Length: 242
Image (cartoon, rainbow, N blue to C red; front, side):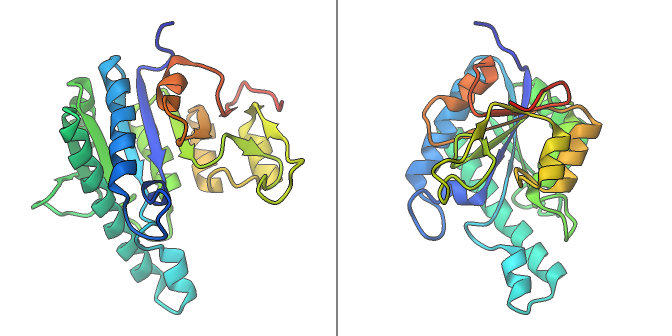
C-alpha cells in the first residue's frame, strides 16, 4: 500500500511522554515514540511534531491556583521545550536528523521558528519539533498544532492520544459510549466533543486539514495512519458522522 500522506504534523500531549508515571518523562516511552516516528520517516514521509508540556506544568492549573494566567502559560511553553529537546535526543539516537524550533527565542538550545526554514528541513528529511507553543499565552498547543500544520502545508494533523478515537461520551465512565469512525468539524464544535479546543478545530476547518485521532500506545499506529488505514476517528470537511 502506498502512502496516503506525504507531510504530516503529529500532535503529542506532554502526558503521552509520562507513560505510567505520575509526573515527568519516561525514557522508555520516549524511545518507543521515537522509533515509531523513525519508521515513518524511513518510508519517505515528512514529519513535524508539536508537543505539549502537561507532564511538567499546565498553565491552566497554575492560573487556577492563583498564578497570573499569562505567566503560567509562559512557564508551560518552556516545559514544552524540555519535552521537545528530550524527543530530539531520542530521535537522533534512532538516527533521525531532527531540529527543534521554538516560538520563544532560546538560541543556545534551539532554532527560532522560521516557517521557510522549517519547510526546508522537512524537504531534507529532517523531523522538525515545534516547541514553546505559538509563543503567545491563552493559546493551547492543540491550536499551535493546527496553526503550524496550516503554515507548513501539512496534509493531515495526527492527534495521538491515550484512547482509540473520538467517543460520544467518556468511555472510561460510560461502557456504552460510541466511538465515531468519521466526524465533521461542525459536529465536534456543536456537540462540544473536546477532541481539540474550538480554535484548533476552526483553524483546521478553515484550511481543510483533516484530523485523525488515534491511540498512540498501539505499536505501529503512526505508520498505519500515514498509510491511510482506517484507525481511530477521521475528522474532515467531506466526512459524515458515523
